[in-house]
Length: 355
Image 1 (cartoon, rainbow, N blue to C red):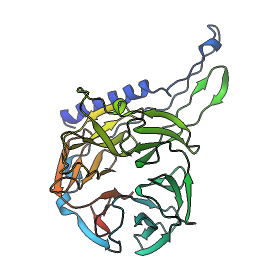
Image 2: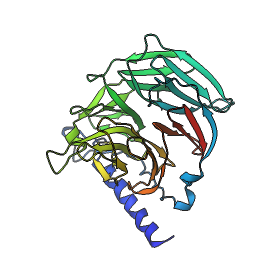
Image 3: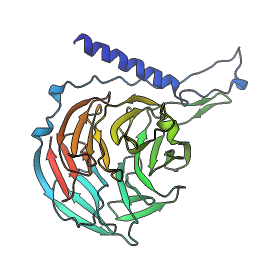
Image 4: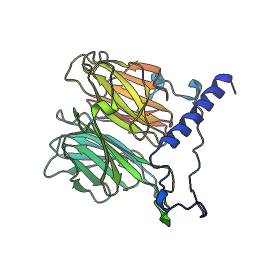
């Protein structure tokens, strides 16, 4: 193991310990119920063992992506955003993609069998910006003019009425590591680990992001733009766009309204910024807002930026540093759960690559 790898390894452990100790959910004590002569029992979870950064030799070359299938069935009015995937757990495991064609149709695509199913939506969506798979609910979540759930087995769509600001740009979910919260007035009471939903709103000042619990969708905390993206200059305005998690942290594409620059910032799950990433490119028009990202191999991120000229696909590491960048047109992207396939939603449809 090289000295640099050992150094990064130790920093990774230090950061995880700091994040764990700073967590508001680490320990909950009712001090009025504590006794100097009584027993105090503290329960905690194991500190997650950090994974070392993959070497560049372990990562695929963006120029070597192999196109293996292209779905060209979209209309000219198709929303540029919204694509997600899910690997079914039955014996005939299949990779399922869900995306939208116009505002009135969802497309379910079985990658293994190349089957396409169209679901007509009535009434149609006002607009649809994001689609994610939620393991905890065993459903797809759809976001845009409102928040919806979609059961791809029954084709049922349900609107979830939670949004005070009914314009959602992106969403992501995170399942916390097992951790017990003890109230010493009731020592038998243990709160189970929770799954959270993060909602990023369009042009949100307050809230820019909401943190909600699942499955209740109850609000845990709201965050303003200045809380999440503080700037040294009060006249500088930065806006968050696509938000995702890799299980270790949150990542969000961020645009500076004055310079047009895009980058990816990394946050802990209390929305405290950990890393401010490198500049990925510049938007050529103030009305261009499509810069999406997806996690790759738990420690890297792929970013699709169609606002710059030329449009780019970028690979960054866990420190927000650019590893590779190529020219590539596209609106949105998702890495499949097998980490061997990448799906890009472009103006023609869905392009599926082997990586």
